Amino acid sequence: MSTPTAHATLRGVTRIYPSLVHALGPVDLDLRQGEFFSVVGPSGCGKSTLLDVLAGLSAPTSGTIAFEGRPVNGVPDGVGVVFQEDSSFAWLNVQDNVAFGLRRAGMEAAEIKRRVEYALGFMGLRDFATAFPAQLSGGMRQRVCIARTLVMQPRLILLDEPFGALDQQTRLLMGDELLRLWRETGATVMLITHALDEAAMLSDRVGVMSSRPGCFIDLAVTDWPRARDSRIVSDPAFGLLTARLWSSLRAESMKAIGRVA
Amino acid sequence: MTRWIDNLAILLALLGLWYLAWWQAGDSAITPPVQTLKFALYLLGSADFWPHVWATVLAFLYALAISAVLGITLGLVLGLHRFSGEVFEPILASFYTIPKVTLYPLMLLIFGLGLSAKVAFGVIHGMIPVTLFTLAAVKNIPGVLTRTARALRLSPRQTALHVLMPAVLPEIISGLRIGFALTFLGVLIGEMFASQRGLGFLIINGINQHDVARTTAVIVIVVTAAVLANGALLRLDRHARHDV
Ligand SMILES: Nc1ncnc2c1ncn2[C@@H]1O[C@H](COP(=O)(O)OP(=O)(O)OP(=O)(O)O)[C@@H](O)[C@H]1O
Ligand SMILES: [Mg+2]
Image (cartoon, rainbow over all chains, first blue to last red; front, side, top):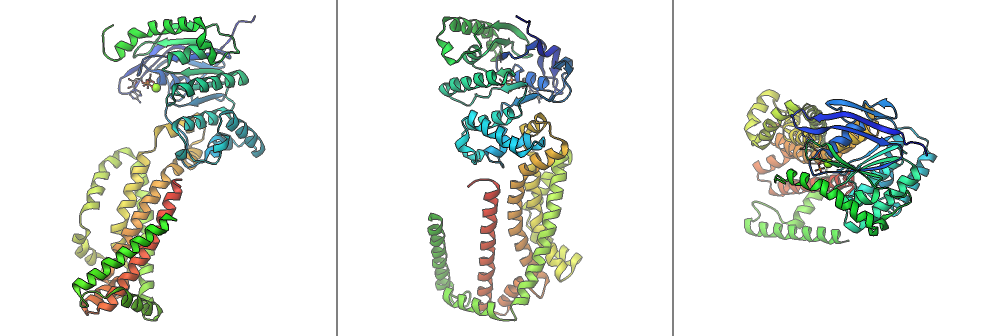
């Protein structure tokens, strides 16, 4: 068995906003090639900030970030982002939203059509191809955004609470879809979530962040097989893992809401 | 279908109110619907009437073009330049609410009588809503949209063309719709105060000469044209918002 190589690397990364809010770090992290990594942490601890600097959308205040061996400076080719907020384009219908990035990149029409159709089918949006975002639910709009990122065939996919707007049942099923996507594309995935069970069920590793400024206080390895799905929630190991995540997180979450542990 | 019935109901209600007004105020103030419509048709068929229509249309088109170009440009500049936007927005908003009638003497002194005065009246009424809507549209572009553009590695030109412009367009169209109505109003007022030609002049002249039939008929023609134009623009507005 070969040792897994690092796909993205963060060393001593911090981010202090111009308003002097120290939001993140220092963070040291290696995302391994092809792994499914989840980040959990109390609200406001700096999870979205971590995604921002890793994606190259904002520069870290200190520290270095590398993707595929090259320092990150602006969004690198091969990185796809799905934001926490709805970022669908209200003026484009679903299929044009999904095709947006490919068109701007100047890809040929036949290939765009092929990829868009595949992504629409994959995300269960085929019947809504000509609908506009205003006609869709929040969860479906988020699926449009995932599809728009997916068609770019990123090698590293960063997702910021993409299922936050969904009910628990749908979230479990969307988790299965995400696992399928991860297996089929072979991409490295970093998923930010506030749901411990979601993190425990989907991930190879789960990073637990402290309250702001967010640092990793626990890295839990799950040892799930690659061919897993949401039925893993009935595995006794799943219960143990969720319990471990919660015990790491409990004190931090209390700090985040202003109580002493 | 129900739209149709709604519109018909509104029309009937208006006709009812019109009769009521005539019944209350009498022939010296207003003419009843059927008589007015007959006179309006007569006006529309007469050669003397159309030069006034074209005078109004011409002044309106000039004023609308200036309101739109100045309003959108100023709105974009103020919206993109955060600091000046914060300084000027309250000034513009308060200018928007002061009664423009206080400026009329000044306008007459500057522009005299005629086309340029009419256009100026139209612009001072119509330009500010266009500016304010454009300014608000630019300020309210969600940050996540520009972040998405960067995440998809768009060039600055692609971002402006394919993200920023379509994001602000519906708001600008709403501003233009309101600017359209107010520009028209301004031009008519300009014609009442500062012109010997145009529909506004016909109205004020009719009032001065106690020509009730003509005044009422011209008002009805103006209102009908304004309502039809506004309806068309409203549809365009909705279309731009994909609010089907
Ligand atoms: N642009 C900004 N300027 C100043 N402070 C900011 C900015 N963005 C975020 N912050 C602050 O930085 C901290 C971390 O924010 P961040 O959005 O990364 O947290 P998060 O973990 O994603 O929170 P949530 O769980 O609510 O999504 C918060 O205290 C937030 O108020
Ligand atoms: Mg966040």
